Image (cartoon, rainbow, N blue to C red; front, side):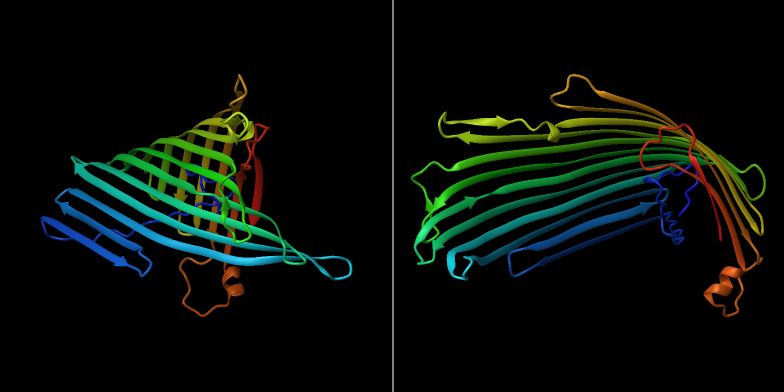
Length: 388
């Protein structure tokens, strides 16, 4: 949907995708149960396995699944760099060798349950996923002069461990009457990334071996990124008359982000690790958005109309770890919308038409009010009009 209505929200001025699933096949069975499982391996020691189950019993549905993937990847390379003087004679040769082995595991799980009780629909779902990556990385560099005499060497060992994860539970409750419906929805997303990298830099011999009788340069970096988002919503809709729908509701967006980076460098003189302050990579940001909307849709044989209004109230707080106070921002954004669509033909024609002829038979007017990706400083949104 290139022009979403007021009851939908998208990122910036982009559209949204509206996916409508087909209804299930009616069955006379009192219950159904189905399961699946699979497992594969590769010649490098990796594997991929999954299992799942789902079932139905009268007005109750349930299901669960789990998938796990493990892979081992090697990435090794050799190369050299040659330096010449102004007369074209070789002055220096640098030999480079990189050895990298990566082990990563992806796993995800899902569980859901649905129940219809006295006309009320209850549905809850939980999604979980994570990726763990362990990497060993070795960079060896040796430098020789024009006579192939060894000058210097570097042996850098950089192991790294990273984990990315998310938790996504949700609950939906709804009820439909003859001409109206109500729905309550809550969705939570907790995600993050934890990364630890250690770098040890030694000198190297002419054979590419580490010089272990000298203290190496040691750096440790620890990154933590955490994101927590709460998405509550409530919607009420009613058919006022034939081919019409009035919808009103509320949508909330509450999120907090925390990014922390700790970098420690080993001081060989004092024999302790010293912390390096990196304020730009240590901060927190909180955003609370409350949106209220109302839409009215009316369809006839040739005309489709949708009139809507959405109002967002936002509060944003940001702060670095070195600041004593938050930077505050409050925004109030009205977002009216109007969509009009008119069809010249009552029913689709079956005659073979070119693309230009088809467009000529259909006239569409779309008037919409857009909000920019950044929070607008003015109170009114910018109206645009498209005619095709």
